[in-house]
Length: 458
Image (cartoon, rainbow, N blue to C red; front, side, top):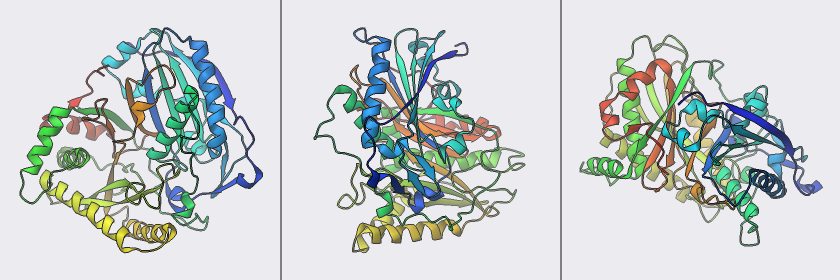
């Protein structure tokens, strides 16, 4: 496929349809919000042509319903000011664009990650890192293909939204566009700082000044339902392992692929590693560690609503391997399952309010992170968007035919897992330093279960 050429045909600032009340003008960020890197949580939704709705009507409906939705999601139209959000109705950015030389079916033949990035509106901000930490907190880009299909790229600052939050926003916006945003649609709750302790500007989390300065590459690996079932069955054959989930199986396989890669790439340590929260800047890391964020809403449903917007996750080191260690998939799955059970025990042992549980988890999380150093640890992160209802996001012209997500700008040593359309397979977007990806993408054990960037089946 030739290089996709995208032309911007319009840019607007969309403000909430009604003014935010004075008593809601300031939103406190949590300690978790505060320590996250200044990037955007992003989602891509693709739709085939609908002959009954014109491009102009589609654009108008998206903008009008977005304005109405921002009345509920008013912090997304505000600006971050230190450890709070000034909910000043400054607005969100909406971009209309068109592709002049490519149809949606052509794009789906080989959905290149760099082409995907063109479907995001981040080219309208000078510095995405600064923007994600200040304004705009929400950007949308509607791109129309020459065949009549379209893509909606959505960016929400990770300082205020995790994956569940962006899913909640999309569902609410889609319902508003369909004219179904009545009482049956649960309104969002902006109370994450009532769970985790509120952010304090005096608290400084260790950061790597070299993070995001190393050239990385992102590639897509697809585990179809039959191969994933084969992988799960293979892992479950070990006597000491319970039958793994789809996410546990893929996480363990990727983790082994990361480790094998490290053993075969020469000169891999000549530059700093770009990672999720911290990264290595030396040539002699003692431990490779895997960090896995967990959505806490489903872990504490009695205290945390699914409509709670913010970063309501628990991140911890779930796997580690030393320089002379060896990774076995069955053992990795067993350790992942143990970490999951350990977290549930910590939650259940803590009696009291959500803020008491949040404080305990925050202390545990931060204590563990502060034990790591750039000289001794090299982190990788695997994050899962599986089971989020993004394929249900109908704005009035049918459900999306393909959905994916990630963070932007991308950072290295990172993998994002997203459901395939049948909700039985998994698509993994893996970001690694360029010199390390070559070995990883040729790993025979990985390729026994995954296909490298196959066509999207509609």
